[in-house]
Image (cartoon, rainbow, N blue to C red; front, side, top):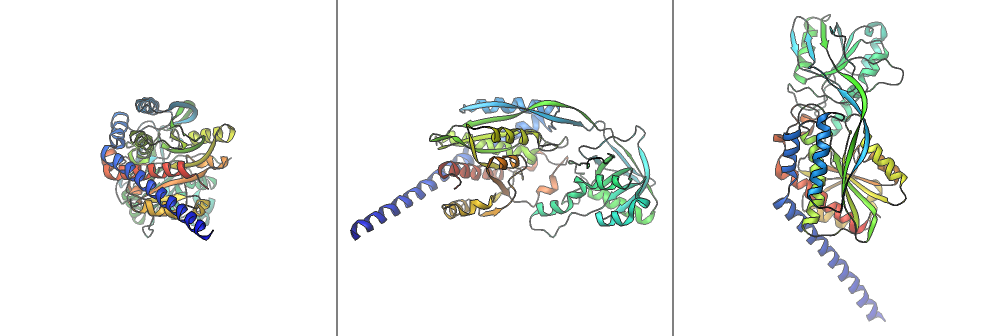
Length: 454
């Protein structure tokens, strides 16, 4: 009996070793195919150079949808379809004009969601503050009728640049709203970016219910310093801003979706995706053309190496992450409302096409019985960091459907230099880094299709 027990134990051990060897072999196939024959880089070139920036509601966004649908169809995947999404339609209008009176012009970009200035612009005294505490200390008496200038410097003493974004970002997200509550006539902010250069960073801003909307824009870091220095010389100086942006009626757009259907559990869904829209400056290369083309590369690679996933792997190019997340919300509502499918996992790439370092994961995934094996396998490819963290804005609404969320975590050091700027262009993407990211995404998606999330 003891001999039978030992033999049985050795048999189970042999099966476990064999399974691990099989996982390793599949990972190698995914890596080799992606690195030797990957098409994500070429696809990104087409998206950036033939379409360019693609803010939701724009003609370029519509063109990007049609381009994506045709590209997915060309790969002969099991299913390709469009999901209708109603998206906001904000337009920048004619180029903004910013001037520090008596000192010179500055590089300025309206923040997404801002209203326009009057046709003749706004020319008012500038009140500089470093943070919300300083704003509140000044109070309505000193703020009313003025232009508030948030000069909050992006912190450099952070290891992960997204931590710096988390600190400086609120001055873009709600700075205008807080200043308007005190009667500010307009708001300008120091760009939320890690580089000291002349590229202004745009991005969404918002206003609390009942708060009057005011024009709001960002200055490049160089021009924020220029304005700061001018205020030292002339504390009562005035600033002129002319902006022509407006919010139009919402329009119809689409999420673009494709999948490889699972062989054993076809109704268990693993989503992999990025957002197709971008801001209306630059080419949306890292944010988030990279994530879209990497996600589609996952399906292309699995099909090319003839590996059939046990669970369905579904690629989604989401529309409208930048100024509303209506694509993510629409798909999330679908996932919560369907009884035919169970969305077990979702992976997003929306942190740039730089070298992969690992993944942000759901807390409960750390207790997966095969977690240590996965980390060991992935570490060989440089994806060694598995930390509890944010999966992604687009996939966030899937959490309500009980979905475990994952986010590709690339090297973050240069991303906030480019984020939401004219400088986010195709030439800033490295082919090898982009395909490395796509390869580890393919590995994780296949592994999840084999073993699930529990």
